[in-house]
Length: 238
Image (cartoon, rainbow, N blue to C red; front, top):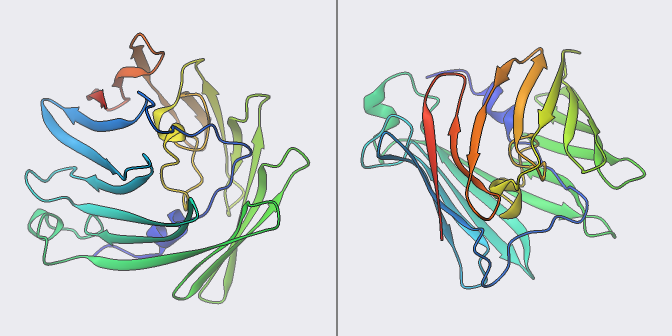
């Protein structure tokens, strides 16, 4: 099995200011992402159009490699449960529904209704917000150590600079399109330009480097995304 620490450091919380999430009747709910005609990711929603399940298939044909489930209280995420198989080294284990590493994350909120802490077994993450209401510092306490990440934003609320716990910095650039993952509030325990910025990240320089090409539908949402690895991801909406 691969080392668990990188995964635990990925499960971190985010609370962006005034997210314009999709609501009832909204046509912007992403349903599925396919690669070469096969499902790569699938999303499920409740009657209020809140994201309740995310399945990541990756190399698997029939069973997801990773599963994330969301529980809400009064419209806010209360818990996120995950079953992670992608950390295993063999395809047989990654695609076997009987395997998996289970995690439960619990969320706490401040008096401004922002996520203030996320708690899981052996780990507590705490946050500091800037004057605009965005997370500027994130401290993950794990196994007696503290890992600090810092973020800077543009005027639209996109993460444009990220410095990790080792002091390595990545700079991000964006398009003007709508980010479907931001709209559905995907992975509230994961600070990332891919789902916590209202626009779509198209380029990274610095510690991480990539470039993405996007085409859009009539609603201004991504229809196809060509990643650095050459794969073309097709986005399907409700």
